[in-house]
Structure formats: structure tokens, C-alpha cells
Image (cartoon, rainbow, N blue to C red; front, side, top):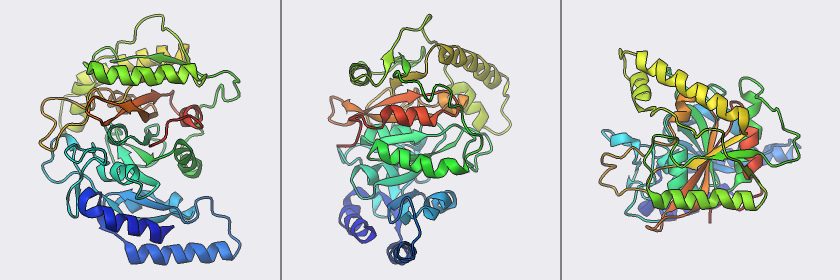
Length: 360
């Protein structure tokens, strides 16, 4: 499995540029160790699964996956110096491209991880999500991207805005990732309703009350939400009042700026927390488009915040996942975002597992 992944990477990398480093010899040695452990009778739940790790320092967060038998084959690309809004990846051979359209960005900052998974180079790659950095590239590359509840897994981000995550081609693989890493997560999570035989209730919001998403993107994501409801996966219900969050941009930026006045940040966070608590008192899930726009070109994002629909949940800490919803008018994938109460990664994964939301 590892040798086959390395062969795929060698063929694709000159064009895709998804990796900054490929650890071929080390990966094969590691695979031999896994083989020996299996031969000796060990049971490893992810034995021999080749994975990409986000950035050159990504191995720091992969200990549970490696202990489960995964083999890291390389470091995936992240944005280069001076990259506006973390929307590009810079691999060893150049700028990372979107596997669906080479003239478009894969999104960021987990750019290489999303591109490598979407192109079938590896079935799973790690990511981190500070404003949408797992979910945005997942949406634009047509894969599954999970951001866990903030604080459940360790990160080096002192602001608390960044959470660990994973990108996979299949919903079941994201669930396999969570089964392994959740054993090391802080807190047990809120599993209330885990035995409910009925599909979870869900609210749909096209814009969270403040964003200005493209109508074409909203239409694709909305159609995906309706398909979930028609398939009996969720029950779409109407909220008593429309969800209207405050734009998290000023709060997020202040929290990221050393020495900034945090008065507004605390007010916005508190207001949005109250509104989300009220929403999740009436429904189990919130569904939105993952991004307000389709992937932009390599010239840059312009004045558009691709984070408009994702970073509210870095501020609030809720777990969220992006799943493939369909395709936009440019031929690139569009994502549907599902958000759950704190600690309910199990609900997100149970909802999408077994559905048609897998990378084509």
C-alpha cells in the first residue's frame, strides 16, 4: 500500500505540487515495521494506511495515527511566505493546484492535504483549521474535511481558534480517524441523543445572517441538504427565528492581533454563543454552504473572504464538517457544511457515514 502511494505521488507531483517533502525510504521502512508487528500478532486498526501530514512539522500531531499503524509518506504543502489569506499551497515543485482545475487554488491552508486526498495519492491527510483551513480546501477539492471541537485535541495555537482536523475521500475514513484520535481527546463529548432512532433535526442557513454568498453556491449546497432530507438522513426543520450571527471577522482578527483591544471580540463572541446555544436547543445540526464562493484563481482571493461561513465556528468552537455537495458553474466542487453542538463529532460522522457524500 505504501509503495503504491509513493508511485502515485511520483507520477502526480510535477503537476499537482501537493507535497513539500516525500519520505519515501523512511515510509517503506516504517511499512516494514508495521508488517512485522502484524505478523507478530498485533492488531492495528489502521495498519499500513499511507497518510499525508500537514506541513513539515505535521508529525507532531500524528502520534495516535502512527500508533494505530498509519505510515506517513510525506509533508503536504501549506502557503508560502506572503500568501494572502492562506489560500495557496506551495509544494516542492511549485504552487499547489486544484485537482479539478489546475488554474484554480485548492484552498488553504491545508492545501496539499486536500489536493493529495482528492487526487487519490493518499486516502487520508491531516490538517488544522484556524478559520476554515480544513473545510475550505475540502469543499473546493471535493473531499470530506472534519474540524473537531476546539480544545479537544492539542494544538500550538495560543488563541484557541485553531482545531485539529482531517481530510479524507470517504466519510467512513473520517470516522476511522476519529475513532483513533478520540481516545486521546479531552472531555468525553456530549453524546445526548446518541440512541435516538430518528434522523437528527437540522436547520438550514444560506448565510448565517451576515454573509453574502454567491447564489450559485447556495443553490448547490441547498440541493445537497434537501437530498439528505429526502434520503431520511436528516429532518430539516424551521427555526423559530432566523439565525442571525454577527460577522465574526472583527473578533477573529482582533484575537489574532497581538495587543489588540479585545472588547469587541468578547462582545461578538458572547452574542454569537448565545444565538448558537438557542439554535442547538431547538435542533441538532446546522447546515450551510461551506464557502460563499467558488475557488479563485492563482492570482489571489481579491477582497472576498472565503472564510465567511467557516470562521464563526472557530470563534465558537463547534465541530464542523464539509462534505461534497455537487459542482458549481465553473466545474469545481462545492461543499455543504454541517455544524454540531460542542463535543458531537460522533453526530456529524454518524450523519454522513453511509451517505453518497464521497469524493468522485
